Picture 1 (cartoon, helix red, strand yellow):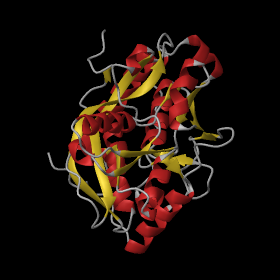
Picture 2 (cartoon, one colour):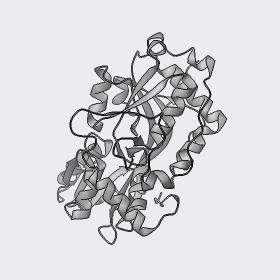
Picture 3 (tube, one colour):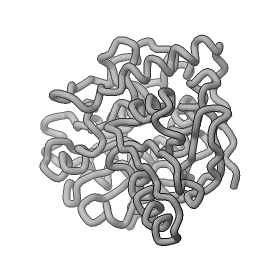
Picture 4 (spheres, one colour):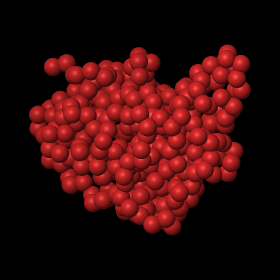
Length: 321
């Protein structure tokens, strides 16, 4: 299907341009030094994207039945640590104060924590460091637009909360890319550790085997840096999850445009290490938010209400009772 820009809340062109500049300036937020923990129970602070996204989501009541499913170690410490790459709006990004992580995942994580009776602490981490960090026990769960894939399921379980594919975007008036096959001979900017990096790597091999020009794959530490490659002319096109690609376009003040077809629609999930005991309470908490309407409000707030699921899934399937 042809990707159409999903409507977000209106804003002026000047404000959109300022948002893009802000995103580019934050290109290194998730990639240097020690990750800074941000308590997402605090109100989202400022920033044009945050202020235009709508009112705050009301606090959720603790569900005693759901809280009883939380493993004792988490109930005892009263908190859960969530790893996110705060360079991937609208899923997660830095507010204008440079300290607070805002976005869909922080909003949803906070609401899930409230239902489970836990305080949620967001830790800003480079995307490709999240899965190793989960395996090493550095983080409890990961919420950063994770594609729920068979490969990742070998070491993680996923509580799926939305569905979506990948989309291409380029400078307005630039190259037209309809499918992965059109990437041969083009310079493509992607974020490190993403499925899009794998997709372009595979496509490059196909281009070469067909005797066509290779793909100049450019891998950046975060999406903001990939955006900068487009702005500066170092890259012709970028690929990201469709909600993220659409958001980059909406924030660009006309500099970017979606191009071609969405591909590879998959489930996206909250990642938890196998054996953590968190899958059942997370699934139950998400089900509670879906039934109360809070889940839909959070998705709508960040412009991706069309990606909703009717019920939580675990590793792409209905959870076992």
